[in-house]
Image (cartoon, rainbow, N blue to C red):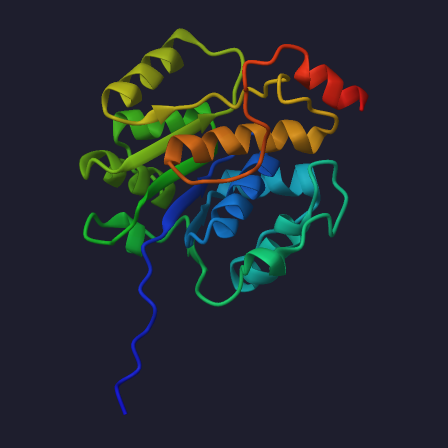
Length: 232
């Protein structure tokens, strides 16, 4: 009998910072899993407070699978069981969770194989930490690794207004090779629900990462299509 070979993983690292916008993170993770991608999840300490405030979910290290499932099933309007997590197979080793304080975790090293990293949502504090190379937690360290290894890094910044200091830091990230993607919903896709706006941003994030999805209707050069869709 041939020896059992464990399925190899080359995941996307998803970092969730403390900015408002936890539904964006959930939509991105669902999109990655639906595309057959593996996910390494890093949830910052500040983002746990935001998640609790926006959804009522307590994200706990010892019960992260249960809490993540509840989070991924939740609609942007707060309605539970909106999404079928089983349909994207969030079980087994498809998702791996690393505590933000674990600076010895896999994503902290350039030799750890990943496809890239998505920070969603990204706070200005997170932007500053990555731009300055502070690596104060695993999220910042993993993002710094993406830059030094010349891997894909998508930063979905979700703050407004932006100060001159933050704008300079975003330029620095762009010059270092990151994709700076403001969490700016658009309306040409014919949004009729808050989830449509969330999915548009998540879809643009996945576009920047090069991951296929069907989260929003793409522009086809036909004026009025969004209005006809919403009226229909």
